[in-house]
Amino acid sequence: MQKRKSISEITFDTINHFILFLLVIITIYPFLYVLFASLSDPLKVLQGGSLLLWPHGFNLDAYKMVFKNPMVMIGYRNTIIYVVTGTAINMLLTSFGAYVLSRRDLYGKSFFMFLIVFTMFFSGGLIPLYLLVNKLNMTNTVWAMVIPGAISTWNLIIMRTSFVSMPESLVESAKMDGANDFYVLFKIILPLSLPIISVMILFYGVSHWNSWFNAMIFLRKRELYPLQLVLREILISNSTDSMTIGITGDVAPVAENIKYATVMVATIPILLIYPFLQKYFVKGVMIGAIKE
Image 1 (spheres, one colour):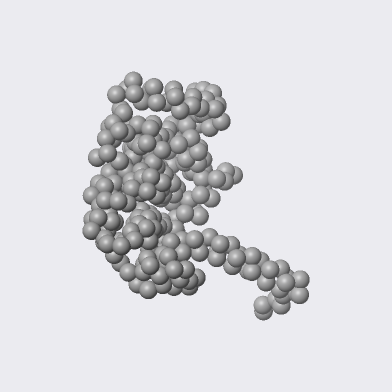
Image 2 (image 1 turned 90 degrees about the vertical axis):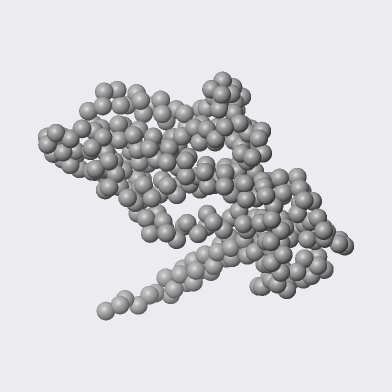
């Protein structure tokens, strides 16, 4: 028999749902505004057309101009390369580090953990990082985008905590059968860690997709620019002139539409990944965050 809620519980639930509804609106509406503006007739938007619930008119010309820009497609190609290559390196090194630090028989484990955690609070800074990357001849190469952030300390600690929570008897029985550490990691630990691996892929993948600062610092060749740096040029540097060639009349509203369309083009692909990893997300974070 279902227990009837008291008046105070009903009041609390009502207020709670109202606040959550407001938070959802505040979070989603800016994204919807950009979507509506990118699909609207630019002249109607300039004249003050409402974009509250739907596009004002319907126009896909801005998207056509964005995809005609060669730098956008080059940025897409480079970003996919950085995401795939960088995430693979991240996962490989983070798994190795987490496995080693999760072993109970590791000598000096507390000291190594102290050194690793220390880097979360104190870093060398931008100039030493640039000098190091430049000294290693990685500037103007793909490696400048994937090597400096090869391991995230936070992600390493989460994955290590997940590995520690696994029964030690699994590792001991495998080693009694002659398995080495590589076999234990790739055949036992990682197959049982699918939720935390999915979360790590999501964290690292999103980080690489949104990364533009390292590209601005370390890359001078435009053919290596990631999509986010191209997006930054279009939004901040107002470099939409090449995409509005041939347009007669006032190009200002068209340029604004191109900016909105560029934001959507750069955002939608990474949003499409979330539904496939969402079912693992909460479970993976909880496994990595709680140690009993």
